[in-house]
Image (cartoon, rainbow, N blue to C red; front, side):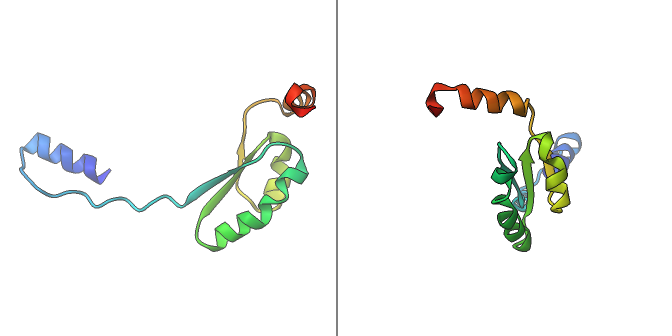
Length: 98
């Protein structure tokens, strides 16, 4: 936003400046993504805790069926689109799983 403001001042007022906006700090947000059952989510719990302890802002992205479990574990939840039951049925029937 600062860079946009500086550019607007430069364009509108005709101010000539060599000033460059300092770089923004890198984002500390990390999204952990998993599909499957509750057993697929459980390994992410300690990883989530470690990331949070180290100053990151982790999120766990998974299907809506697991929202209650994720929020009960005091983790930030992001909903993945799609039908989990359909995905499970597809994965079982797919030839690469046999």
